[in-house]
Image 1 (cartoon, rainbow, N blue to C red):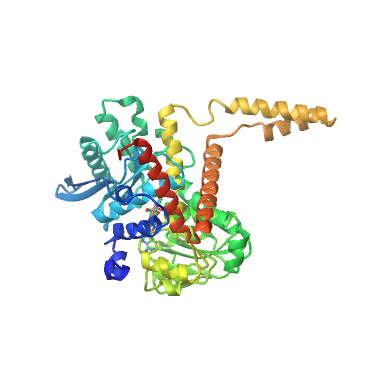
Image 2 (cartoon, rainbow, N blue to C red):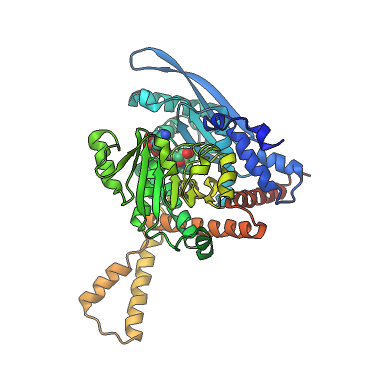
Length: 485
Ligand code: NAD
């Protein structure tokens, strides 16, 4: 079937319809570069199970409302399955299946040993009070527990659009009350507050991973030359759509890395200043006025989506899926599009951007920072020990011994005070946050170069290369399990 008959209308895709088909279209394009039997490819592609539930919620005024929710487990080629939970009004069965599939491929790309899953509750969280959100979250967890759709070795949710550490803490507490196996219960959900078994660095992980991935691309001199850009992040202009968890942290790390933030958008609109915006000042302005609009020195844009067409080196869509479509892709001026959100570029738009020579760094790789650090959190919960706790003091002592040996070998005269200061500087040992961030950096760097090499070998784009990488790794798992005798 041609793409034209598959997708009649990009607008329908933008609303979430056919999202799973789009992911499968990308899968099919990549599968042509592999030689796996069609039956195996079909098994990798399908979504293993979806739980569609509806349950009543008591509102604060005593009335009852019925809420729709979903959990999709795309692939059990590795256990547990893993994926975020989003609270958004456009959540649908199709959307959770698509996002669960992306999770499967994402985990494979960054060598995180999970299958993919995704959950969603169809609500606009701004229309519910904190107490109501707690009741919804706890009821959802109860439903998942009863149907065995949650558990440290079964399926492990995490934050996504519209959810954060608070919802994860409620999920943990509810699961804890229901499970007969409390020992490992902490590992039933990730993205928890640090005091509730969360790992330091999880909140910022997806934004930081996005920065590491784009930085890796910008350090490739040949690719930058093709785009007519200098190597490195320093001085590059960046536009970010959405200043939530992922967008805010990505923007922060780009700014700290020396890039210039020229445009941002939020739900109320978009602002642009070619001379550069200061992220913290934009947020302060929003806190004071309730909006990013009318930020001093910046231009307000007519619509929130105009931000996607601004002149810039790097465009980071970090809010919703389906925002770059067949309609606006020809007007995107960025040289690099870094998909921090899931599915922000539709399949049609992807082809247009590729033809126009834009480097699209795909979601299936670029926003894998969240699940990578979730994996570190899950390991921490199962091992019941903070990362670095066993080795921190030992590393500190080793550093001290090395420093003493070097000063002795090089005959360096050093005052005791100066030596002590140096020891204090060098020999602190790695903190949990240091370990998490360095594990994340290494993961993003290694995976980028792995898919870059596949792209080079097959002379294809980075998204197709990432899917080829994922398909090959998942195929090996299935074949090794011997499920196809
Ligand atoms: P979030 O809820 O923290 O932030 C989303 C932000 O986008 C909000 O501030 C919202 O107001 C804003 N927004 C909504 N509509 C907008 C519009 N039309 N224009 C501009 N801004 C708009 O969600 P998040 O966790 O940052 O997730 C964002 C995206 O990243 C989603 O696609 C999600 O699936 C993906 N993602 C998140 C994680 C994670 O760890 N949180 C991991 C991987 C992928």
